[in-house]
Length: 306
Image (cartoon, rainbow, N blue to C red; front, side, top):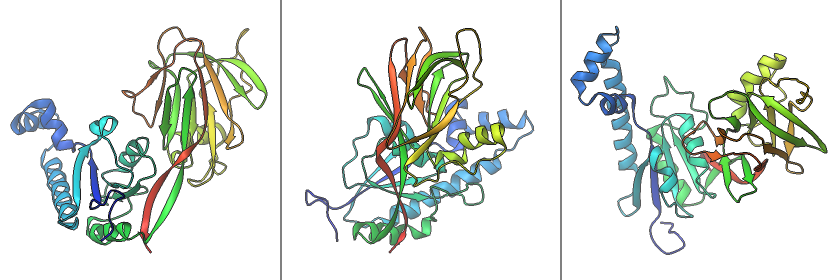
């Protein structure tokens, strides 16, 4: 059996988020109050309960797949920003694709096994495996015989020392989505903007927000990067031309050889966050400069056993 650098057995860290049923209970207190709330709106709690039970069954199957002598931890998405990952953890994300993206920003090269608990509802791009495959995949990871897909990530470095990573995209703008004011620099050109913000996306994020923007602007998203491409795509949303603002630098590509720089001109409300997690954001106030580029870290996603 493979062991970590310190000689301890491997550790499997299972990452989940609250199910819809758990979220309903947290909001309404009891199952009956949640049922009443849904029924008064023509909805039924039965399907929500069924999916919750299936999720619990999947977690049980994964737990049984972890060898008895291995170490294990179970954390939720809310725990990610305070959990201390070990370098050789086997991170097992059980949920939707977005959960993998949420976890990726807190990792430093650990392998990620994505388990899809509901293939009938989830696309499974980043969670391609069934729970029944867990035992075989975990053993293969511990024995270093897996096929790993290394996906490009995006980083933002702020000149006050803060840094942010994301697997899909980083958004820079105003937290209330009103007009964001800033100066943008790219490939030797600079201009002042008033816009709905800037989105800098990876190839993983090219299937989501960036794809919608590209289709809206051009009716075509074929030029967006692929997940493993060492490049990013950026888009300025709804740039407004005026006597003091321009609209020339509104989209482009960022490679490992260049960067996109944005200087805030927002006294209040400026923000910078990744993968839609607004409660883990950087306060992007007037004068701060954020440099966005390809991150040195990669999302190391286990695709199959070799």
